[in-house]
Amino acid sequence: MARSCWHKLKTECCFDLARRLSSSASLPPPPLSSSRRVVVTGLGMVTPLGCGVETTWKRLIEGKCGIRAVTPEDLKMSAFDKETQMLTFDQLTSKVAAIVPCGTNPGEFNEELWLNSREHRSVARFISYALCAADEALKDAKWVPTEQEQMERTGVSIGGGTGSISDILDAAQMICEKGPNHAAVTACATGAHSIGDAMRMVQFGDADVMVAGGTESSIDALSIAGFCRARALTTKYNSSPVEASRPFDCGRDGFVIGEGSGVLILEELEHAKSRGAKIYAEVRGYGMSGDAYHITQPHTDGRGAILAMTRALKQSGLHSNQVDYVNAHATSTPLGDAIEANAIKSIFVDHATSGGLAFSSTKGAVGHLLGAAGAVEAIFTVLAIHNGIAPLTLNVTKPDPIFNDAFMPLTASKEMPVRAALSNSFGFGGTNASLLFASPPRTD
Image (tube, rainbow, N blue to C red; front, side, top):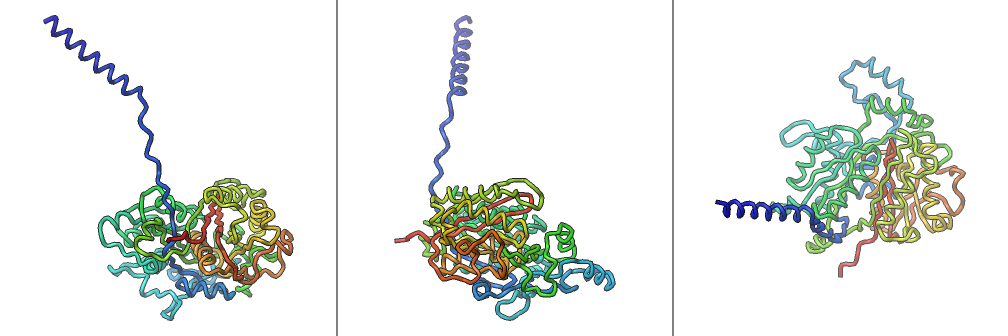
């Protein structure tokens, strides 16, 4: 009996010692993340310049403008009587907008095709824009996953500045089943953050392919009235809409509200190479920051923009003088444009002030697409690399005094080799994102 008790005590002591040793020993480190490179293999767009990448890009480079006068019908107040509609319309201080052209002609958004689901249910307009852009991007990439594993390795990261998040997730499931589903909502930086987040999902191995971008359709009485109340919209150019959005110009007085969607297919490099995919560019860097200075105004020293651009450059492994083009966020607001211009100058220094850096704001042509802006402008940046053309800034007739002959936004589209390019997106509340794209890596 005594021997049995001693054996039991000895056994318990051994187990206790083992537990102590086990708890005190450190666990092995996690596996190192593989160096997965991310490339762009598909593009899709719905913008105020037209429906489709080819139509939008051609009109942008040619200097066309997608901004027009707002009509009472644009305010989406059909449930109200005519008197209320006209009273609301008359009280709006800004009466211009960048509206997607709708119709059945080439380059127009076909509402009959996209505003109703297969179950004959109505689809929210901003969702329909995203579906249309995603459809074009997937076809462009020639990516139609059919096997279960392919679908599980394909994800979605599409955000909107306003609207229902549940609608966004439903739309994501319509594009493809399984894989990560993600919707960022970070004001006017939403599109850029969605792309950057998708890039990291591919880098970390959560997916091999991501459908990424932003979408927006906020041209209605409530949205316009709200931005008017915040004194964010232009009011001087109601009689001349095509002159209303004028980034970097002395006559700027606020942004033009716009709508649309931009979607990119991001893919792991080896995955793209293995299936012979066309590669537009590589996503080399993603930087973000939150200065949280003011609900509508950036900090006067541009610290948020500087931090986002610095982090994108650092992640890319490129020097600032290797960047050939910057697509600026510049929305045509008096304060924001000048602060961003100073931030660009402080980051790129001699490369900018000597005239070696090309930069522009494409919002002169398409207005401010809010949650979709970062994605549409990222596509413009990718196309600048792919086509060797830096797009112009419309309506710069009297440049802000911050500029000089060498440091000046492009006022005409410029054919030039673009090896690396940066796209900036800054949102209300001080949320900032910068995406750095580069020429496709050699595949031989």
